[in-house]
Image 1 (cartoon, rainbow, N blue to C red):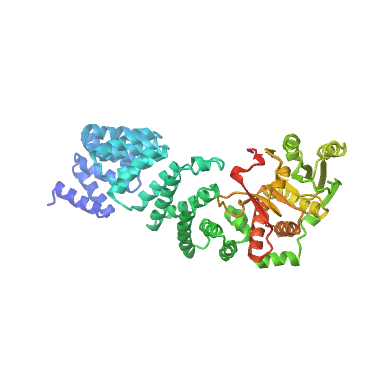
Image 2 (image 1 turned 120 degrees about the vertical axis):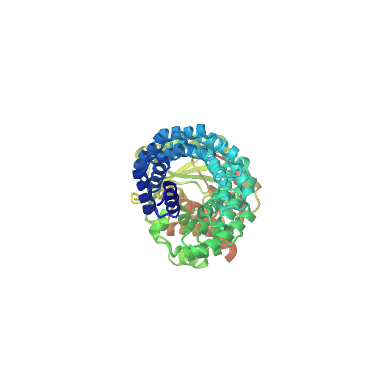
Length: 558
């Protein structure tokens, strides 16, 4: 005849072998035959907990504790069942009771940390995990959990200490490398820094360590690490803090990624940015379009990076098409110039905007112009001007006291989303510059109306070497939509400048005609057109001013 202890051993063996129904049957028979056996109540409760039946588990383990209130394992497992039943406070009390009964047992500390986490007490969770690690300093699970707990509290330096301890114990572990990458990324400050402060504040060594950790974790099969690797690279490029060598290494990983997942837009962008940095923009365009065929137009429009790269054109066929069929975009606008500038060779500052921007920034820009750029005339172009704005500008331009000319255009932009309307306002000034140069006025200097003049670009022109176009360039290699910055572009009265400008205007217009215009088009067009002309011949003589040390304008924070 089988004894109670033998039956219990058989039931435990079945339980450990995941034959739960058979184990439960024996536990119940023991309880029926010898209800005083606390272990049977406890183990049946554990089985119910493992089966997701938390309420029954709480009842059964409570029966065990009623028979033996001094068993630490009963208390700890009751805490786990209570936690599963969404009773975290009661759970924490049972885990504490287990520790009071057996202070040298590590497991209740880990479970207590889980209960504290459920209660939102991350500090208590961290303290419990630290106490667990005093008892088991090499426990990988507790090291990882403590690191995660500290990271969730933005205590990234302390979290990194735990991950580094784990990395020493288990070098190359992908989930640990991924977390080390997150900590190094936080230390770099690249994700929260402003563009203007990036050069001073971003810790490039920490950024490189983050990218390296993500790359190693991704090579080890960690899925999130691959996304972070490419995403971090794109942010670093856009922030102007990504060095060429690191970008090339990430681009190699991105190419491998695209072989298996051709719709990964961030990996695709990394490769294209690397080609752009190598002055291979035409190849970047071809590479992009090879993978963009897997995307619908709607999907491209919904993905920021895909949208930016869809506006990058550098191949000869595109520019030949512009000459064969000029776009209609700007020709459809009803543009009028009631007060034209004089064709006297005087440099012309040109600002273009809508009525709202004129109201916000017009007065300040007029004051800045009169104080800092007296050698220049001013031309203001307003798209869809409100009556009060048009009347104000006409009064200013007609009283004869200022060298001010104006133009207006009426165009239906109601079907365009807000970013595209803003792009049109920024782009229309290129067509106005084209009109002014063809009329013999200029040179024309396009500037942003929400900027303040620091010095007179018209006077400075006398010291420039022979030139056709002057650009403000961001030399940090931030991409073809951020290289030539549209806040300042100057066009001389030369045939080379006018040929270049004609292509730029056609480039912009074609994208509007085809419904592919978006933010950055007014910067992509000048850069890509120049790149095309450099490779095909006929590039204008270019003067480049460094954006970070630009002498003529201060750009306001918007």
